[in-house]
Image (cartoon, rainbow, N blue to C red; front, side):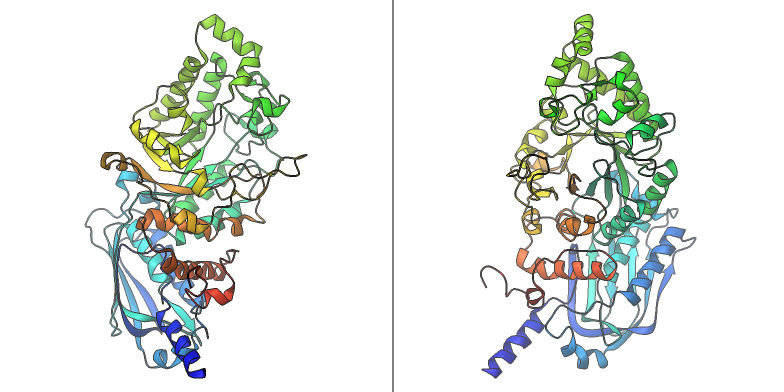
Length: 553
């Protein structure tokens, strides 16, 4: 019996993946040799006039190699590797270089390129004989992605940093250009430090867009030049505000980590917070019963039939857009409550005076705000209702976010717009937490059940689409609406679940969930070593014994 148990233990150790690579590279070849990092290991940056953010990325990578100290997730946590690593060859250097002769641009600049222009390809070679490893790319953004991968190759045991799978050859590139995470900072405010910590974690799994849903009906925490009265009265407090300096800091921090910040100012719905300073622009301002006039409290929507409101909103959108260098800006457009406008006397009077329908007025409003963005060379982004529920004029460059249901993807594709997967039935991280509306003891979240990482991972981005329609898929994102979240539970709600989308849209669909799970365990444990409060995916017993807790085991 003891002999059988020993064989099982050995098999578990041998069969456990040595990598915590996430997302899985496009092309990965490995060997079976042990290789350790030399005590004086260094990363040589062979790039003339290397940008400061690339130098900083190299320094961070070297720091993680020293401080991660992640032991292998196997029984014994690497004890059985002792003999192999003791006699292993030593790697002394990684040389990082560009293959392009073009002018060297910073990671930050390249991270904010148009989606179709972003170059994230890289190749990484780690020989098994101790000779220098090499990382090559034709962009600094590609080098940054390769540094991220290199940092995931290594484990620690007895103060030795090592791998068991040398030599290693990787050629990598993303399947989709957009890989995002959305955070709502209006329902509850999030300090800058927590946003930055989230940006760090995003960069470790190659998420490249921070979709910042910064304002909503509950609060308007963004301080906008020329419109400071809105946050002055619409934020929860004077300290729960993002100043222009804060925005600049977050955008800079994100860009240096290969992340573009796409802000969203949702209009014309979800805007009651503006009514605190400008009640003349808001219909149904905190009207009751709120459920008649809004999807959640407080009720209040921009009175877009009014010319002054159209001009006010257009100027506001332009002012916010100038704060963010991204080429993308979301104007929202979801959950417009028509009952609100039907009950609003001024709206009805203005419709009668102009002879317009509500849809025609909405189109005029949308054209105005989007023209302001186009003049600033921004691409408008909208929620799906703007193409499926309303008849408004949109630029053919507009990008649509499909959120209500994955069943709506085909309908959006048939409209011919590029789109991003953000379906609530796969990617909403807040689902399954129970109802938050008061006086409703049996209430559940509207998008039950809880979305596991496995379910998100199983999503097919081109399911039911034709070959031509599939070309419209830009990528996808996980989203966190924060009715029941703040900085205290941010990490465990997001991580490591959001990493499932990171791999889905970097590597592509169709990967094996059973073999992905051990790698995702490693991602979570490495994140924890770096200060992220991840949630366990399974009991540690299961994590140390890959496959033994599968339903079919």
